[in-house]
Length: 414
Ligand code: AMP
Image 1: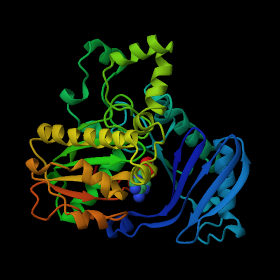
Image 2: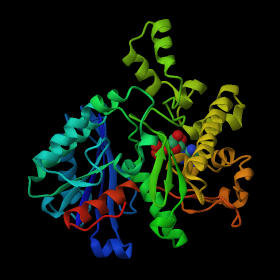
Image 3: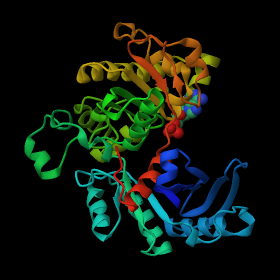
Image 4: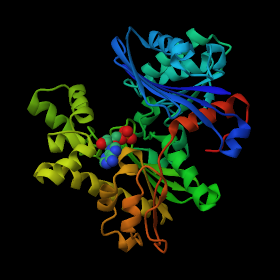
């Protein structure tokens, strides 16, 4: 089954085509045909596309909206000049899997999209006004292009976290605010946390119930999850992705009174402050330079800039604090798993986070940590009481697999 995986943003569309089926999933023989991204939708868009191991191609085209982006993409893929042999026309795409950011309390697992489900996703727009409308546009565009005969599946960022108990998902605010507006912790990056938890247990030959780990997704967005007996019992992102760890441009945790203080002192509205906390804060806000960890590390090596150092220290300190608090929340764990662009590729950040964690039985193996970049592996000493792993995430693969399982009505283990 050729599954088109779509992640639609405000002006971008990330896509992959993965050939997979129940047998291929079991044998771990999923076949990634192509991947890429359309950027700059609404104007002259840049389309980057990589077919198998061939060099990435870059194309440009005026693309007015999500529908036009998808249309352009599919025409290109099916054309002779693309050189893509597997897809000769749109009929060779058998299903579409969508990353949907917010499923609220409605969607606890990946779901076949029909009119009722689409309405449910629209109802969650209130909870994710920046993300869900784009996901809806992606779904509508795919429906328009493929027709209703091609099944579409929604895979929610929030779904994996549905097992989190009340004590961890409720905020200590008047309870009626939860009842009236469903204000609670939902958590995000669920597909990523779920994927690396699955890879961890595959690496160690464990069952789901034997999986007691803390997963740290450190990318431009960052989140932590405490996974006990295979299910999350807590996670750091909250009602929105703003809470928790320090991120590229998001502040993560702060005193909520700060919102009012900034609003008053800077003459801003609360939504302007929210934007500042989402887009001007985190690594970018502290360093005053960039949200890009690679650039910050290079800057630190070249110039030892004080604010760059501070940004890195605050980032790592917050992550370490979360490991400590999740160890307490879970009554101990077997491993910490690093993933995301930073978690997968930066031994320096991992080492800084794990510094002075010997009290918890965590001892990094320096050479292993250094060499485990962009591939999975143990990065602690083997006799560490609390092990550490780096595992590259693959949300698209999980979306493709869930799409197949949902269509074939096969239970999909979370
Ligand atoms: P993501 O959102 O998962 O794509 O992660 C993006 C973040 O990963 C950016 O801050 C990148 O600078 C960071 N990143 C990617 N590669 C490296 C690397 N080799 N060293 C440090 N940070 C990296």
